[in-house]
Length: 261
Length: 281
Image (cartoon, rainbow over all chains, first blue to last red; front, top):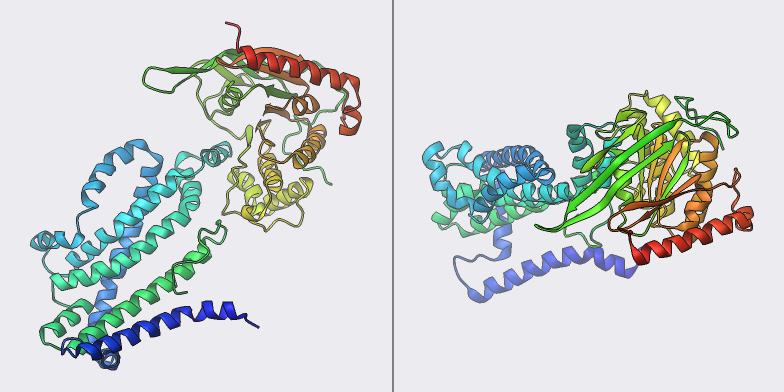
């Protein structure tokens, strides 16, 4: 039998969502503005979008770019971050570069990238890649830096070469921190995905949203926002499940994880 | 408890061996200088020469900051001395190797591996077959008193248990020399005593060479054949004391033994002098 407190904790996210929708509904009624549909109107528009083949192709194209951008970024950023964390020389070389790129909104680079690479998939995937890379590099770097020296010495005494130590000690030891970076990266991938489609309109979920905005179909605009938001929540929840499994062995960092799972 | 099968029988010597012991580690005029700031150097070790006999239990005792751990790390090959050299069996030490197994105060277990995974790591790295490595590791885990904990992760263990795992993990790849860096320093008094007893029991069985760093006088006397007393700033060897007490040693007998008591009192007095005056220069 679940205690009342536990029940309240379980139900809290549901209440939060209902509360948000209720506030939206009320605000929309109060303002009576054509460009601000009620929550119910927006939710009603969702099946139309999901039932439309064209729209689905667009959303899937977005997800594909996001998956590629995220995947490539993770594969490049983790080794780079780990190397930076274990080698002063590598860190000294890449740190200034990253510090320059870090504060620049990646979307601001898009016009330039578009000049070189056009408005197609490559440009948008590259923007997603850039958005994901930095948090993953940063957290891999921090994780690798924090690896206990004595743990590496223990490995060295067992006969592990420097390369083996990087892959078989630094990587697993830094994994909790790396996955924290990947989780931030995943959210940034979604944001970069929509932003890139907003700037280079051609296909994708962002394209549907902004086309609808141009045509004054405000319920579709809000429905798309809900769909994108739901995608984010689902991806994050799936990722959190995977993360929790991979680092079961790790010391718990937070009592209340910031997630919906 | 079972005796762990050992790959080499070289270090399994009878307690009553009469042959003269051969030297396994030679430390020759080793100095270690750390640059603490742009113009200040800290001399951690100054002109240390020491030989360690094969199969001996040698403690390095001294106040904090006397460079005793640094000396251990030099033998381990983790730190390269500023000058001088260290040799194992006549070969210069140029880096870490499976012939010298460290056990650290911080345990340094692999937290993503279970107890069994940690203990099996070394033998697997050395190319032992999984089934053989597992069987041997299980025996070792039993020997250090952790039977039933094979599938626990380090985070689920207490400090004393973690150190038992660390000891088993190091014994698993059969190092010729155990390098113990204040291994019981982070444990409470009771756990510490129990681990000292267990370590002695294990050691008296296979007589591996042990280099044991500590700042506890009674720990050093209780465990060792030889105590190397160090002084600080710069770290030098003050005196090497032979501990002529019978083995196997039992704590309850030893505490009542006047010879043990005299060693402890004498060395404690020396410790106080060293701490007050530092090195005579």
